[in-house]
Amino acid sequence: MKCVRFSACLAVFFGTVLTGSIAGASGGQAVELNIQMIPGIWITGATGAVSIEYTTNRDQTSGWTPLASVLVTNSPEFYIDTTATNSSKRFYRAVIESGGNTNSPLRMVWISAGTFTMGSPSTEVDRLSGEGPQTQVTISRGFWMSKYETTQEEYLAVMDTNPSHFNGDASRPVDTVSWNDATEFCAKLTASELAAGRLPSGYSYRLPTEAEWEYACRAGTTTRFGYGDDLGYGELGQYAWYSDNSGQATHPVGLKKPNARGLYDMHGNVYEWCLDWSGPYPGGSVTDPRGPITNPYPAIRGGCYIDMDRYCRSAFRGSGNPAYGRKALGFRPVLAPE
Ligand SMILES: [Ca+2]
Image 1 (cartoon, rainbow, N blue to C red):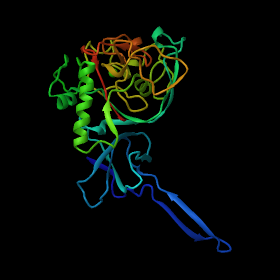
Image 2: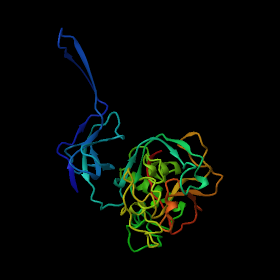
Image 3: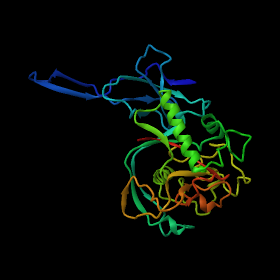
Image 4: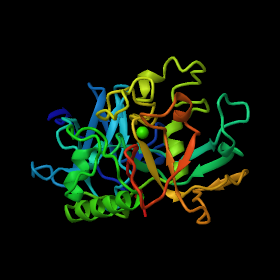
C-alpha cells in the first residue's frame, strides 16, 4: 500500500462549532465567528482508485478503519465522510488501492442521491416496448455500489463454493448464481463485515433495485449507453464484453473502460440480478421505486457476453426465475442504508 496523503491527515472535529469573538476593525465591536468543519480529507497527488480510512486515535498506527473507495479523477479532490456523527473526532488518510483484497468494501464507489429519467424514449434506436413509459425517479439516499461484478474469488470467500460454469480464473465474475444465491451472499457478507466492525452504522449489503442499477449505469447520461449513443455500436467493445468480442465466454472483471462513476462491466460480461421484481414503469415521478410482486421474476440488467449489442443498452430490461442460475447471470452488491 502506498499512502497518498498521510502526514497531513486532516484532523476533523465534526460538528464542533467554534464560536468566538474578535474585535472589529473599528469601534471594537464584537463579531461572532461560527465555523462548521466538514469531515473528510483532501486527496492530493494521485488519481485513480483510492481507499479512504479513518481512525479516532492518531497514535494507534494499526487502528485504521476502511470507509470507502473512491475514483479520484482530479487532484486535489475532497472526500466527505458521510458516516461521521456529531460527537466523533476522526483523522483521515487516503491510500492507493493495491487490489489485493477483492473481498473488501473498499472496492465500492459512492453513488450520490439524485433524480434521473428511467427507461428509454420512444425514439431510441433498437428500443423495446418494456423500456417505457419513461419515469422520473428520485433516489433519495446515496449508496455504495461495487465497482465490479462479484468475482468468483469473492463469492468463494463468502459462500465456500464456486458454482461458475466459466471457472479456472477466479477474477472472472461468478456465474450460474440464482437470485436466492445472490441475496444470501449479501446477507452473509453483511454479517461478516458487521462482525469485523467494517460496516458504517445502519448500512447493509444487498442487491441494487432496478432503479438504482439504471441510475448508476447511466451516470448522469440520457444516451443509449453510459458513454454515449453509439448508434453504430462502434465503441461498445471498449466498454463491454458482448457477442461480437467475448468469444462466447465471460472475462475477468474490470478489463474494459468504466463509466463516469467508475463502475466496470455495467454493459455486458454477465447479466446482473436486481433486488426487486420486474414490472411496468408507472410514468410520472416516483421516489425509491420497487417493482411489483405480481410479476413472478426479479429484474436482470446490463446484457451479457452472448448478447447482441442492442441488449447491452442502459435501458434494456430482462427478468429471471429467482431460483435458477444461468451461466450468463451474476450480480454486484450495493452497500446501502437500511
Ligand atoms: Ca454486467
